[in-house]
Amino acid sequence: TVKQNSVNAYAFYDVSVMDKIIQETDITNSMTEALKTGQFKLFLQPKYSLKTGKIESAEALVRWVHPEKGIISPNEFIPLFERKGLIKNLDYYIWEQACKTMNKWEKQGLGVLPIAINVSKVHLYSMDLVNKLQSLTQTYGIKPRNLELEITERLFCSDSDLVLKMMNRIKQNDFLFTMDDFGSEYSSLKLLKQMPIDVLKIDQEFLAEISLSDKVKIVIRDVINMAKHMNILVVCEGVETKEQADFLKETNCDYVQGYYYSKALSVEAFEKLLITQD
Ligand code: C2E
Ligand code: MG
Ligand code: MG
Ligand code: MG
Image: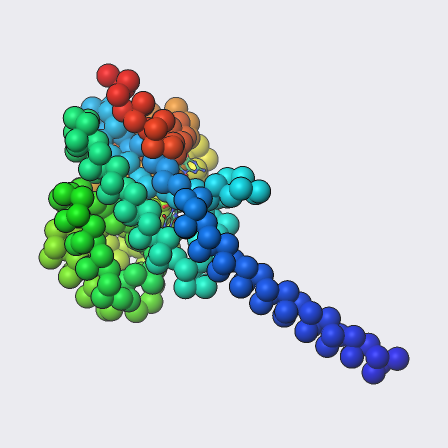
């Protein structure tokens, strides 16, 4: 009957809500557990200078090495962590691993290599961010300029006044800002004008179209030139083919990053690459 069906529907609804709650309690627990037991690993993707052809910095990218599920990609858990308010602790952990690694390299005579860290939106609404960054750089003897903060363009769309205030505070402390995924939103140009940006990272989806159209090439070339006129460094991410690399060499692009050069590596593998690159 209709009545029975609707009862069943409610019962079903209740079960799925319960499932969700259990799952979400689960994710909080397993995330805390994973942090404690070192399941989150710092991976580094080299960033190459187009002028020297050498690795000049790296981007810190987290990997969850799960005991049962294997390596889980950040796209699968970062949005969930953000919703559950878990992202801050994970970010702090990864930033600290990055600072420790830079400190180790300097001690080992590998020199100073800047690392770019990804900064989730939630940090920009809390005063903890400035303190956290200062304490990290002081503890590990790192110049703030060598810690680049990557903020995705998607975050800038709303509340930009608040974000702008926070960014200016951080810039007063000499940290660098990268606008990540540039070109993925319609408001790109306005943001470029407003925000205290040091580095522009052109979105990989943009680049993926290079082989498709000469129009895209014109836009990329012009965006790069515009950034250079504004004294902003330019990185192209997601370089996958020789064709893309050759095109970028003919532009004023400063750095490239992508599978064509190297994927993100464990710290050990990254160090090997660094030592043998000459
Ligand atoms: P993102 O910051 O834009 O990082 C670039 C992503 O593109 C990385 O994916 C990288 O592995 C991937 N990639 C690099 N080269 C290529 C290429 O040539 N082709 C293609 N198709 N992809 C390439 P990953 O590591 O899976 O990270 C995904 C996103 O997760 C990152 O995008 C970033 O927004 C976020 N993320 C990663 N680690 C962290 C973290 O520690 N904290 C926070 N808050 N977010 C993170
Ligand atoms: Mg990034
Ligand atoms: Mg990006
Ligand atoms: Mg991207």
